Image (cartoon, rainbow, N blue to C red; front, top):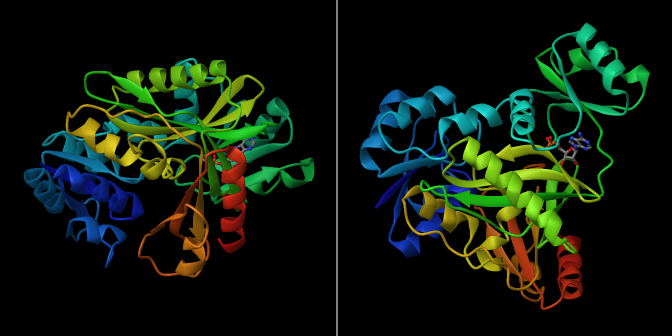
Length: 361
Ligand code: AMP
């Protein structure tokens, strides 16, 4: 079998690496030179919206997926007309616009932060009057890793905030006083079977994921059941196939949906070693109509991103139980260069090992 993947970054690389033992070959569509995923399959070097290249990808593959959510929806629809494309284009459409996404969550019965659309300075003033401060102004499109957003704490910060984000359509969200950030990863196949991994806790630094604890410590069964229910509602509504990640704010027993990624996700990298089946393998299995694998996490794990600079390999490996994944990328401020997963028999052991890792990463 052959799987096409639009995008050739580290997520494509790890999807390709999960496909290899199953005897499935991957073909990547990627415009950049020497992409991270090249070690895991062939590369068609072309722009993501190059029709001839999309046609060639569709012709060569049994199914096609993508590894980033800003795939042009037209390109996705063009592919979907020729070959099974997963997740479906309607998932991309919802995930690409924060306002559409939040309204979609609410329509499915998920709780979210209070929000209001902002299209100019006047509607920003109205939104602030309606929601109050502190609030966060975010561009509706193309924001990621904390980019394209401004926190508004005082009235003095309101004038000019819309212009500072480029005068593009925005959404204002009330700040949620969350206890922690968690995400639920789920996989759904074409027959409608849904499996979720246990909730994981995510700790961010400067808007970028810093590390993940898997499972999220002290999660009650009711909270897990609520997350499972959210994943079921969202994926059923989209007739979804593949892995999805829904980022959530936890406040007491409540979960507020912030955003979803229609793809494998950084908070699921631990699953390569930490879960009975990784997010990458289950994504491949779901898209190719293969049985889904078990999502249990037998012992606690922690997973830290290597950002900006590459610590010496020997130091990373000296941390007990460390499993190192380097993406083959050059150093650049804020860039994700790799990740390291540690395991422990107890959470305390994981925290200790993660602590040592974080002094390096
Ligand atoms: P996002 O780009 O929406 O994932 O936001 C990046 C980070 O900003 C999140 O991981 C949170 O730490 C924080 N954040 C975003 N929206 C809110 C909100 N409504 N209330 C509190 N914190 C938020």
